[in-house]
Image (cartoon, rainbow, N blue to C red; front, side, top):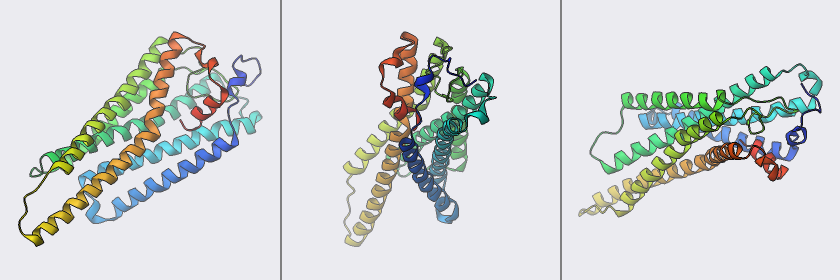
Length: 291
């Protein structure tokens, strides 16, 4: 499998130690942060509420994605360091490895963004209708099942619609694959719309409505003690909404751009199969490591 006859050989020597160290460091921070969130939610009795289950689901998905990133960065390192140990790898083996890792990576990204969209809808519902009951356990369970079902279904598109050619170092993006057909590009774009564009629109609309409602609402209060108490409650609610909004934005910033970029490259590959030659090698090193 690993020989110099591949015309794309030089394009696949992208592994660099500084990028890998940075990726491992950022992934470790993400795993530690999300693990802390899960432990706090699962160990504190008063935090075991339906909304917090959605937050824990986001944290678990983000942890899974960080682990997949580490795995996708470790495999090329192992192959480039010990090439003889992987000499028996076939194209079928490469396809299997890439499809499995891409499936889990796509599922975790999609589930995280969809869960954030559902959280935004729940918060918007609570703020817009303060006297109505928030989402209960049954509705939260339906939301979780829907999020995972959509994520898994969409991930099959991205994972099994692309065939990967043999490379010096395993390339699991499919960008260099000769067999990257129009069908593959369509599947990639559909996945990007379902898993990124729609959730981002929902999140943007919901949080815009939440912020507008929180900062425009004026409650007529007459008794001083009651007024202070209500003010504290409102301040705490605003703080929690702000914290949730910040975590949402950070999660989107870490995953959304790569989905959009991948869809763009899939579209360009259909128009011009050799478009990637116009990009410098540093671009591919940046893209492959964190994705």
